[in-house]
Image 1 (cartoon, rainbow, N blue to C red):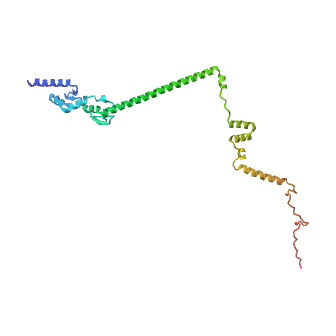
Image 2 (image 1 turned 90 degrees about the vertical axis):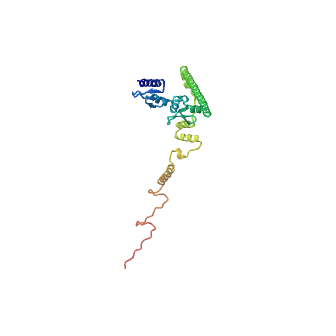
Length: 270
């Protein structure tokens, strides 16, 4: 009879301990085990076992580590990507254990403070440059908009006031040498165009280029013309029966032999 109140008192003390500690809880699987939230450790529902665990140095260190708010040092110090119980400093490229004392010592160090200051100054300079660029873009945009608006207003006023005057007030440009040569060629012919074009270049074109012939065509045409002239001259010269003048005709005798030709000797029969 005396042991029963002791057990009841122990259960009540265990429930009071678990309910009074935010890091302890009973499991929901009706096993009655006590679970530590920070470390995930599970224990049977015994008061002395729970007290021994929560008073041990391992749990005290773990609870201090998990209860400390390391997120206050972000983005400079963040959780390590591969090691769950370590942190990583992005400024100093240092791996730190999840120990509040060591993290505080690192944060108060001279190197960390200087790098934080340099980073803040760089951010200020970068923000100032970005703001300057933004202001310049806004200014240029406003100027371009005002210029376009003024141009549109001036064009509208010109169209409403004197549409013909604007067309007549166009700047007259002097025609180029080639255009002048082309106009002169249209009036005088192709030779004039060629001569004018050659004059514009400052030198005289050869006859072949003026006649638009290839490299060897002019020589061939000249030779053919000379040959045809010779033939025409020989045909039109005076002579007998179409024989060329200056050549003596062959004289023929009574027997049809050529004159002056020696006679053949005949042998007499004995």
